[in-house]
Length: 359
Image 1: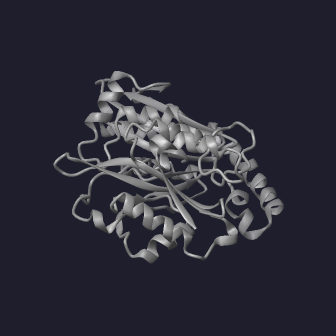
Image 2 (image 1 turned 180 degrees about the vertical axis):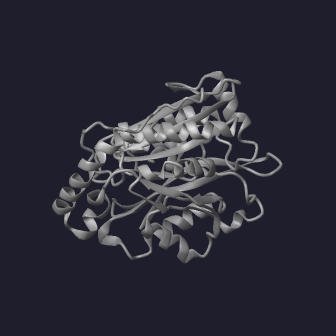
Image 3 (image 1 turned 90 degrees about the vertical axis):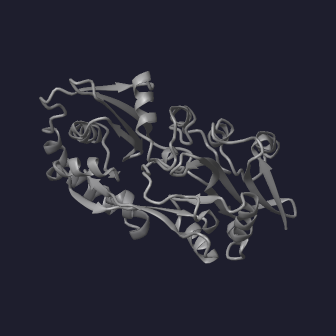
C-alpha cells in the first residue's frame, strides 16, 4: 500500500490528472473552495490518499483554519473533514493509517465536528481527541418529516410519506396565520452582501470568539459553496454534492437607535440552520426569531436547529407554532496535543468547522 500526500499547491493538478479515476476525493465545488481558503497556505497538506496496485482505496481531506487564544494570538490547525474507504477494504485500519499520517503532518493540530458515527469511532479508538466543547441547542420541528428522518431506517417510505402529507395538510392552514412582522420598529432587510456596517459588526462581536472568522472568510464561504442544486451527475464522489434546495440568506436588522444585527440562515433541502448570529442589542433577537420562523414557513422547511442561547429563548416564545422541540447539541473535539493552546469557554457559533458549507 502506498500513502500519497498532497499540499494545497499540488491539489488542482493532482485532481485534474486523476479525473477519470473511478473515485474522486474532491468535487469541483469543494476543490474550488479549498483553493480559495483565505486561511490556508500553499504548503498545507490537505489530501491524504491510500493506493493499492494503482487503485485509490481510501482518502482523507482536511480544511485548514485558525483559532485564537485569550491573548489574541492565532494558531494554525486543520479540521478533519472528508474520510472514505472502499467497501472492500473496510475494517482493516485504513482510516487509522491515514489519520496517523494527518496527525504527523499537522503535528497533532487537528479538530473535528459534524462527524459521521463511523469516523468518530476511528477517532475514539486513538484516545487522542478529548471533547473541547459541547454546544447545547434545540431542534424545532415545524412540519412532519418522518419520511426524511426515518424512511431508510424503517424501510417504509411510502407509508411515512402519506403520514407526512396528512399532518402537513392541516399544518399549512395554521401556519398561514403566522404574522411575519410586529410593530416594534425594527427594520428587517434581506441583503446580498455584507456592507461596511455589517463587516464592522462581525469584527467587533468576535473578541471572545475561538475562531474569529472574518468578513473575508464569510465571503469565501458564501461565494464558494460545497453544494449545488445542479442535477448534473457526479458518480465517483462519495459525499454530499447536490441538494434539491441549497440557499444562504443574510438578514440585516436595524433598530431606531441604529443598533444592528446580522442573521445568517442556511437552507439545505428542508432543513434550516443559523450558522452565524451577531447583535449589538438584545432587543434584536425577538425580531430575528420572528423572521426565522417566517422564513421556515415560506421556505417549506421541516425543522431548524439552533444553538445561539438568546435566539433559542426567543424561538421558545413561538413554541406553539412548532410540532415538537428536541435537544440537539453539537460536539467539538480537539487533539490532545493542543491542550494548553486551545482556551476553554470561548464563544463558538453553529457554523464554525466545516458545518457552514453544508448546514
